[in-house]
Length: 176
Image (spheres, rainbow, N blue to C red):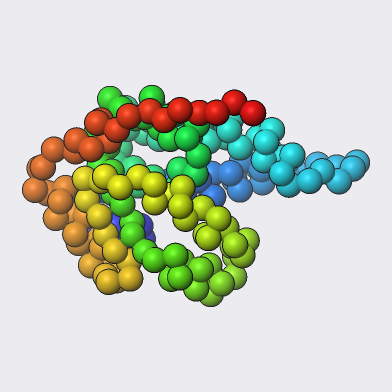
């Protein structure tokens, strides 16, 4: 769907994927470093992910501030990230799109791709779909990527207001 939006010629989009953003960060900054000891991936995640997600969101805001249209390709997997999204993007023109798919289909796609940690889709499902209000929804089981992109472009060209994101409320974040 993102590729279809990027490849069409009516509206210029820039695509920022959280996966690519994090991979690029580590590949560009730490590719030649040889660790002297093994560190669990969970420890790395605790140290690095929140700051990298903040930098990712800030980069998107900068792109928006300079007038670029950005496809934000991410999963808002916890309340802290959700709240940060609200803080950073509440005053930006944000078309909030729900990309809908069943848990079974997500699991099937995860296994078929071969480049995902098996079980991640199932573990994120309830948190990802805890948001149930969007400006627009596209169901990727019912529509192919071209149809999804056309639906999104049609909404953008309709000049309807992007209002849902501005009306979302911050969530309580438990401190552990």
